[in-house]
Each structure stands twice: as structure tokens, then as C-alpha cells.
Length: 119
Image (cartoon, rainbow, N blue to C red; front, side):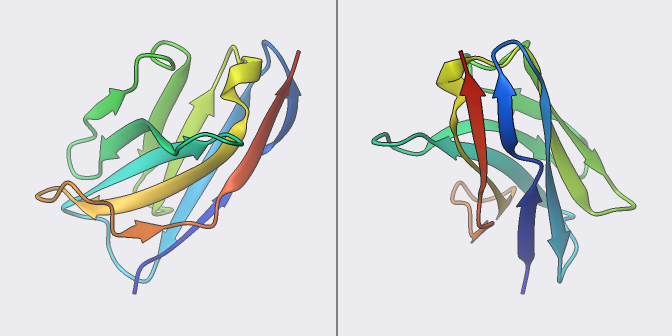
């Protein structure tokens, strides 16, 4: 059973940076895509970015492209989300999730980590 644990959230001022980590255990991430999602209070969960484990290809939602970078570390079985130039509207609980690349539905989810950006 795949387990995901996020870390790295916190409180930061607008314009600052944070790096989130998503550590996977229990199985390999080969043939998987790892995504980051976020959910702000009173809003639906939204996609932020994903990375394909095998070839490293990435995709970002428009609102974070150029500010956020998703990456992976094979040795640590970990995916990172480097968040720069943070804005108050980036405040949310951030979740990582995993799906097989051949499927559209994310099957495994972490518990989430809170990111708060003050103005």
C-alpha cells in the first residue's frame, strides 16, 4: 500500500518561498504521476502541478506557472514543490497524490500540509 506524507508547509510573507515535500513509501512510483493539489477555505480542491516519475515531464496550472517548480528525487522517493513569489491567494492546504500514468484518477492521497501567505 502506497503511503504519502507531505511536509514543509508554514506561514510566510507575500513574496517569500516555501518548499513542500511528498515522501512516498510502500511501493515504487515507476509508471506513476505525482500531483500537487490545494484546497483553500470554502473552495474546491484544485490541481497545481504534476510530474511523471519515469521521464520527469511536468505540467502546471496557469496561476502557478513560472513561480512553482515540481521535481523528484529518485533516491529519496520524494517529490518536491518549490514555491516562489508566494501570494496570499496561494494560501491553502496542499496535498500530494499519485495515479498510474494510464489513468486520470488519483488513487493515493497524503494528509495535507497547510501553507499560509500573509499580505
